[in-house]
Length: 168
Image (cartoon, rainbow, N blue to C red; front, side, top):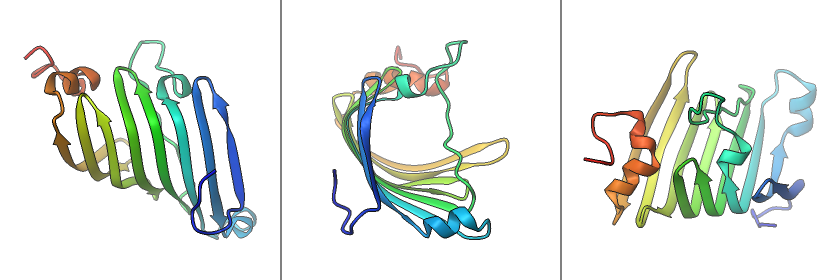
């Protein structure tokens, strides 16, 4: 599996469609978290995939809209995830060599280090997404190197806007 520096409590591996995965980690304070509704818990895990097909794992709606999904966590649970993926496919987006360090909890997802190769170039990002009752706020810093801008707009669905598109 993967080494996170300490003996893990669990390891899961398998396939889901064309996605293969291996995840290994620890659930700190796990028994108390499950038994006591006032206790907090923390999952620290490492995820390795050869191929991650988001389209297969989270299919688009019947209207053809891009899949939107949230992984709701109990407010008293934090997830710390380090991920390594050889290839990722999501709608028209295709990336290779993805490395990420993320923390999810309290209605927020934070990526301290997210790097990948895509659109004939490389990208490095950090930022967070805050999920509100009726809103999603995104703050991000990105460094793009040799990225084909036409491909960027095409693979991201023109960022769901029509003012500036891949055709411009």
